[in-house]
Image (cartoon, rainbow, N blue to C red; front, side, top):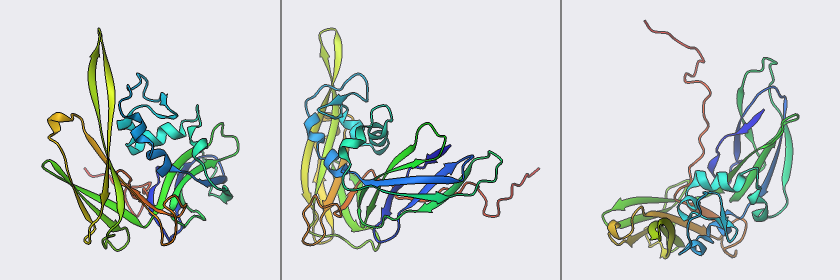
Length: 272
């Protein structure tokens, strides 16, 4: 058995690390390939005005049919990586890299965890698959390697964004990025109710301090509103769709390894 943990975003320039849980195996084969996650997210305006399908994983124009779910990290990941449909395949780019790692197998059938260094250190968005002999299906995940981050703060009828270097925290100034404002409207159609996607794309640009302030209409006019900021900034001399372009979005989590025990010394204690 093998399971890849949710990986999140990692810093460019350092080897990306993969955390796995496994059982009854001594070898794990990994495959990593670039995936065009920025290109997929950029299609979200196509859902504007479209009816939300009854089933959350039904496609519209080849993308997720619910605009709110499309911008949420967990739903997006489960949608693209659903092993019944393999939707992620059309978004893969470049050549895959595969390698096999020996892991400790004590023969007791108990679950174990470990962290594996990958050969990936360049910025980009990646698909990863882990496979062990005898397993019916591999485990899959996506992760981001980037040197930028977007922070946001709620202000009444406004949203403040800060575009920063993910390592130093210094501002990334004069950089264009996009903010998607998404909400779902319920409408009565005869004796039934329909949910309609609404998507507004706001073009933004950070100032000298790395900041941008977005004014918003009162929430009562757009119920269940979600905002999702995306930055896709090329390196000097590179096009915006270059594989190494720096990418960040406000829903991405940063990688932190999970300790399989709650105490460093691995000892359990009972207090009476």
